[in-house]
Length: 177
Image (tube, rainbow, N blue to C red; front, side, top):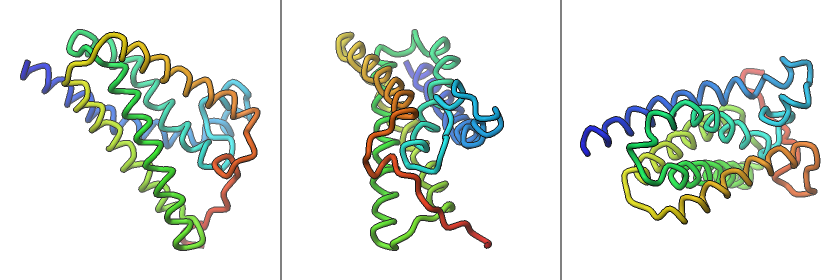
């Protein structure tokens, strides 16, 4: 089992770097695609917090397409681990983004990038911890459904955003201007 735990940790470390790099690139892919609606589903289309949460979700989702094949026999609760990880990453980013905005009455690109990096670390750390534990098949099935529903909501709310603060485009304070 020690080898499995070590393998899980290595994949989660690689996943952390993947999420940070690919998530950062997804910030620009909508513009690079000449504003393709297909690319809009998994890329940020504006500066709202919601659109930035998509970057972590889809970077993780793309990594899952690779990682799952190497870890599927090493754990019984892959879906639960990934679902808890991405939910906690998103909650961390939302809570600390709005706490900063409330305290300082503005937002900061540097701070938001830092939140994304720390959020990715939290996501992968919790996912790794949960993956090493036991969970029932029914909990994993439910977690898988929740993960898919989150992805569907990201797609739907890209084109039909609710009138709620999370979906409002932020005005960012750019450093060095």
